[in-house]
Length: 118
Image 1 (cartoon, rainbow, N blue to C red):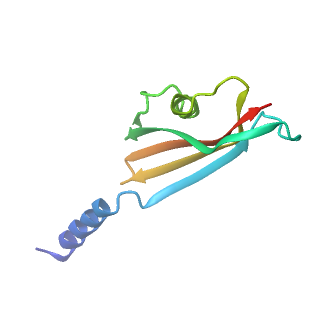
Image 2: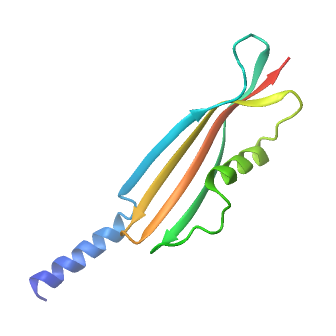
């Protein structure tokens, strides 16, 4: 086996062993609950919802309406808000992982505190 072919096979094999070696993380913090006065109690801290999509060679990602929308829907499905409750300290994070330049996984994570107003 010649030197170039052996190196090519090695590089491809290593690429499959470490498929997510390139990731990009971004995020933002937002919120609408007014927590300036002492009129609330924290019901649950750091409740979380997530959503992801996979794109291969520029195709895909059609299975979700929007990553933030899907992540919020999943958060509220797992942590249903009751009367006088709201989400506070909402954080939205994104992670993008590239696999062999052709595949991309995009993930959205929403984390919040569930508070109840008196």
